[in-house]
Image (cartoon, rainbow, N blue to C red):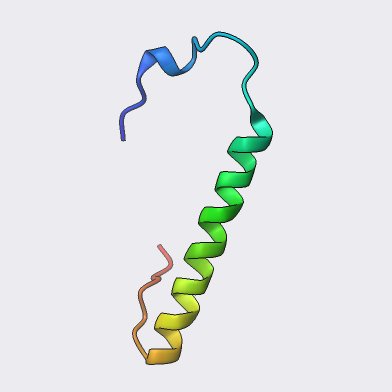
Length: 48
């Protein structure tokens, strides 16, 4: 994954709450998808 340089130089205040909310939303989606897969007997998540 490559990070572009212009992301660190965004003008104005970074909205940390929005970033946090999107991370929480992604985790919720991941957990529900994982639970569904496990219920069906398909293991998607493999610990490293």
